[in-house]
Length: 405
Image (tube, rainbow, N blue to C red; front, side, top):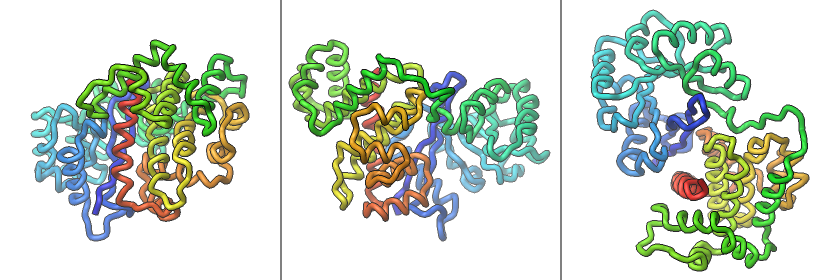
């Protein structure tokens, strides 16, 4: 049974990436018939840290991992590097003497302990004393409970992590209460106060990006743009020579780079460069998430029996956060972009033959495995291919974004 792993970002107060929580399932099901939590987590450890490489999953950031009691008392976490691992103690763990002694050893060896889905109980006091991070679920807890936790723990040196933060308002409230870290999809929602005109400079950039993705675009014009722009030329060469490609010989000319990337590759590269320019005041994760979705959609299209245009699918994923990037409604943006109707309809939530591809990419990112299972079946995509498609998309996005910085 393959292991499915997704990552969910955890942000700092300045919306920079602090860590990623690893979300996983031992297969496509939402539960594990006949497989306990210990087995599932062990599979994640072996696949992630000893096979796949945590650096690819987290981009060098910390990894938050849930540990059931039995794996804690067996001291399985000691197999992991303490400098990048945060151990999440599940909410149903009973802190008996054996567990407390193990947690003390973890802390002594340099691990960070986080209490997951925290709800206060007197029996948790030993864990509260040892834990450095307390995770508060903003959906399960009332505002009064959250404020009480904040006043109780912040002054005592604990760092609070607000999870399931879904709106900008919830993020601002958590900031004011003294939370240090934030987890949820607030970062991908547009902050639209009123639907004003998009600034001309940004509109020009997204028109260029839209044209670059069109099937009938003149590729020679794209090549001239690259050759005449020193900044893009530098970023292109840096991208082609990044570890992602593992090249023996260095790429030293623009012409060589363009030939190496090909028509579709150069269009994708230019799109990401422009997307990065548009979102300079946004979290880096917004761009990475867009590129990850684009790559997943594209690669799923290549192995799907329906045989859609992979270039259209890449564009679909790439533009899926454009409303949050521009703080405008998707409807307004779609009226001004030269995109195919199937893409516009899918992005706007209307009926489109491309909708399931984007839904599959989003569902995999969020670790909603039951929905992933249904969508993969609808698209007739082999489920065994999805983990490697996702992992490749992470590496592709990190390399492309690093070049665009």
